[in-house]
Image (cartoon, rainbow, N blue to C red):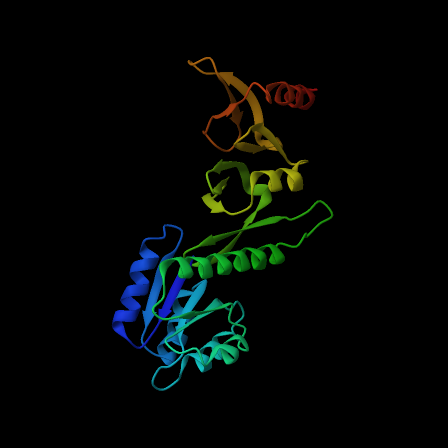
Length: 245
């Protein structure tokens, strides 16, 4: 996730940035020293989360958060402060968490995990079915924001640890949908060829043997050769025979 750090004290921003740098799944989108600067950078960097100090000269964090919450796709707000007397007011602005300084790394990680779950739920809420057959687009995150990938352009999905790679006509992207969820939703359009891979049925044109004795799927629209496991090979062969018939 992209995180904007807002605090009028440079050491506080630096400490938060250092802790975030240790978390591979997150990155610092920018740093702001005031509420006014936070508004500008939110519009420019489109962060997923804003770590917002409450007490700042000029526009304080509460006012800045209230304004940020009015944008079309507001980031999650996590307040940071050395004082606990603003907790109720902070949560009234729809903040998802409230961190007291000095902030511990474990507590920060917990708050960001909560924000990540919220962001995933928001994305899934946007992915409403466009036809009776399900979604016609897959949402993915890029540095510039959220992008829509037409399902008809997707060649395959490949699982890789925490994420799934989507190979499509314009390149590839990472998404957070699980391979199991994708198979359940798009089972009529994609076929499982391996525990790590789903391929588009209408792009599957044949099979070939590798020098290592393994079987690989030959696909239209991509030079990639994906291994077909012995478990899934009979079904893939059956689908190819049916297509030829």
